[in-house]
Image 1 (cartoon, one colour):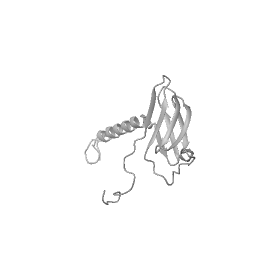
Image 2 (tube, rainbow, N blue to C red):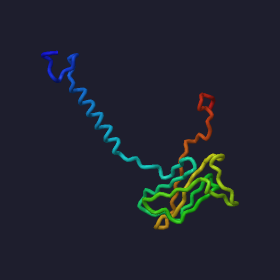
Image 3 (cartoon, helix red, strand yellow):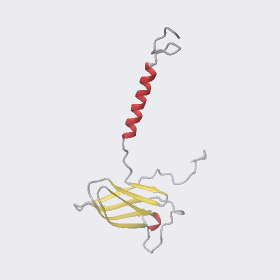
Image 4 (cartoon, helix red, strand yellow):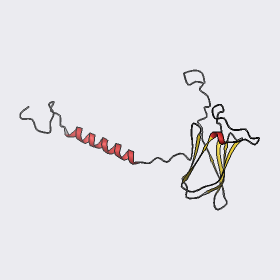
Length: 140
C-alpha cells in the first residue's frame, strides 16, 4: 500500500467520485424532503372526511354530499382552514345515516358560496374502479 496516494483505493480508482456521488445524493434527498406537497382539498381516511380550504376566501353555506343523497352542512369554512366530519354524521332526507362500513362512495362533492356571491363546487375524483374484479389477474 505504500506509494499509493491518499485519494486512491486499493484497486487504484479515485475515491473522489464516490464522495461526490454521495454528496450529490444527500443534496437531492435533502431538497426533496423540504418540498411541501399540498393535500387534496377533499380527503377520506376510513370514517373521516377532511375538507381543506387552501384558498384565501371563506366558503359560506357549505354543503357536502355523499352519493348525492347524504349531506352535512357547515355555515362557513374559513380561508386557510380545515373542516372534518365523520361519515356516519351524513344524513339523508328521511333521516337515514350513511353507513361507511356497508356503502360504497361513488360521488363526493362540496358546494358553497364565495364572498362575492359566486357559486363554488369541488368534486372528489375517484379512480373509476369500485370493486376488486381483475385485481388478482381475473377478467376485467
